[in-house]
Length: 82
Ligand SMILES: [Zn+2]
Image (tube, rainbow, N blue to C red; front, side, top):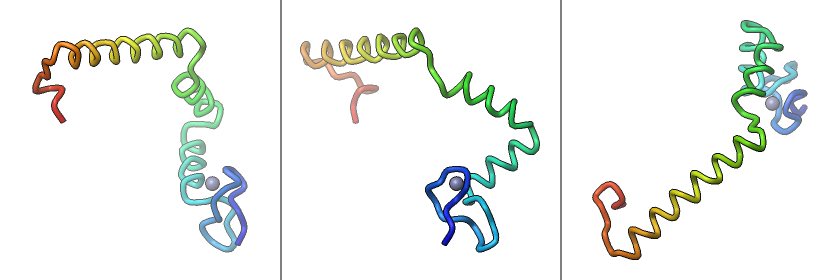
């Protein structure tokens, strides 16, 4: 079976097709909105620059510090209960 030309990972939908079902959907979205627009959205939404990554790291570290404080003082709020 032929592998998808786009993701190069998953078998194609049909024997005469070129794309897997997910990549076919991406291609259809690209056909509607334009591939340049899709690329810009992916770059702006999915790709984080160093400053944005550091902000995420800092916020996660702050979260874990807050959780550790909760455990240290033995107080577990309802919102923190599993
Ligand atoms: Zn694919």
